[in-house]
Length: 364
Image (cartoon, rainbow, N blue to C red):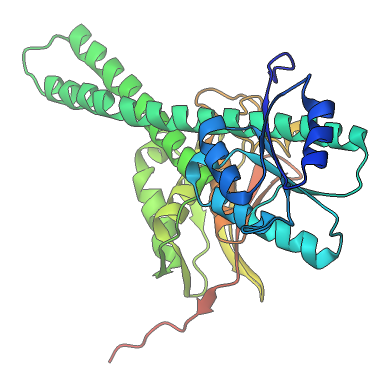
């Protein structure tokens, strides 16, 4: 929670001593304040004082405020510092230059004291939120990395033990429990790590692949789960399509969507898979005959760690659909869910229009 009692640090940068004195009178009681009278001095104070917020004048001799702002933003260690430009300049071009330099906001002189104090409070809260979110992401990623190694060892040695001929029925059951639980934890760890990577930003490695191969590979990976529930997969393969995408990420998204459909499908039911296109987008559409999605939560099911989203939820962290959402957005697309008229749910995984329809190659 944002700590209102902590004395946050503000660095005032201005070559006008009168303005600095006025700002010290306004802010000195509530914040720990340091001052700088030039851009060069400001850069030194940023490192030594480590401010939460910088009130930065633009018109200064030597380095102007824009240059100071750019220099601060080049240092990853200063990522969370909030910079408010204070200037008599008020044109749109000048404000835009400030934002492009990395400033968070722009306040035109003369300004109201109440407005300045309100902006400071707002940006202190934003800084706090940014830092907490980064900390959570870093902890999740670190925990995921550190968990994978021991889990791989547990699953690997359990597989070896499973092959022993000296086990009785009960011991075999125990080892099967270890394998099942270990694989579930390993899969959740992989998903958490992937979600963290997607949230932080990940580079796409685009390649041209046949659409059919993506679906067929996912069906093959989930073959055991499909057979266990005696589910029929109807895959519309009409048309021969090749599309450009990140095959590893899209494979993961389709795999999770199909896995989701299997999880909520009753035994002996059918899952339909279609691939469609128009002039602007291409879509993978997966429909099941399960209980459907609660209407009040239908817009929340793509949020990370949401568990109360689908009827009869059984296991998992609720992040598979969040991963699918992020992968779709990375491809300039989106993902949508809807309930079918009779029963079941339909998920449409949509990518921007990079599809190339090709005629099947003729052989001699």
